[in-house]
Image 1 (cartoon, helix red, strand yellow):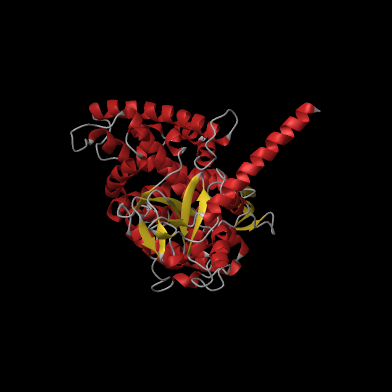
Image 2: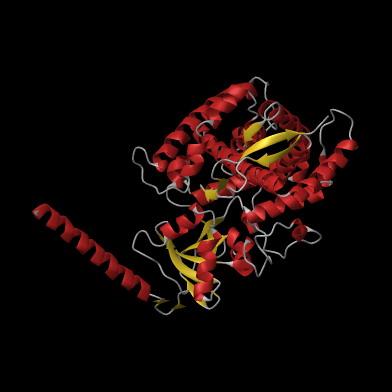
Length: 482
């Protein structure tokens, strides 16, 4: 009995402390000499509004967290508390433009503290500095001129993927197949890894790894974060063996210095003449594989979903792809000119990414005090920009839940309103690569099959940390008559 009373007393004191801190936090709406902070509610200490934020994603509507508060405070900027940090959310096209235009001036990229445990080599400098170096390196390999040479290889790999994973089957689950497709392409582009067993050893831990990136950073056995750290170690060890073999192959002339990003990393020194260590290279390749696998696989999966649900959209894509196929000799690979003709197909893909944005949003950090819309954003505040809140805003996209590829005809949406690849200096360097692999996927999909969802009324998807169909999207394949 005394133990129960003691526990009850502790709980009462804890709740009282939380309430007093909560009340104090809500009243702190101005900074001395700096003007008012944005309107908002920072929620409970430590937790803040993180649970509301995560719950909106788990329910499949990440934009709701932002749009509800924009309406509540009648403001396109509001204050909150996310992932353990004081934060402000800048919404809409103007907010996107401000953040993208002030990259490395007023704001810089920011990642939750757990990222440095998943990618431990970044603690030797900083995630931001490592990201800048990597983006410079990627520009050489991911610009359109360089990727054009890769389209034929991409087409042949897609053909093999569909022959082995889709053909002669009546039912498939799309999400894991799409991940296989994008991961195989990423392994080939970044590290020239094509051996199926080696690709399989790399891919198995990736689901745990990707899900851990924005998990609560509690490193205890059984937690998603702990599983992610273990998965990253497994992948890194496999990559280290690939790197060691590549060094031998380069020395013996069996590998080309320009064949992929891995060779480039091994042979390129920094401004001080120092070469990257093997562990750091493994970390960079690991990050590239995550980016190359997850966002494009999400886009491909939801393309299948919407094509299955909307027969008239499927027909438009099919007719465009058949016209391209008719212009080619049997067995010819797709090329740059073919992809340029896929205008309707790309409009469909863009509308899919508007409705199911692969990366719902990211964080920045204020590196100086600044004013936005008359409110002070103090140095150190974290800033969240939400692509989904822009994409689902009815003032920007009328009837936002309606699937309408014509939104992207001609000049398309206004600047800073369609931002699935970010913008400014941190715009995704793999935009063209993603476009190519998505269009090649669509071509090989519709030329082989019509398809229907096996769970017709199941439109539920969750954020983990990207949007995915809750059941992986099982479909029934209906091959075309030959």
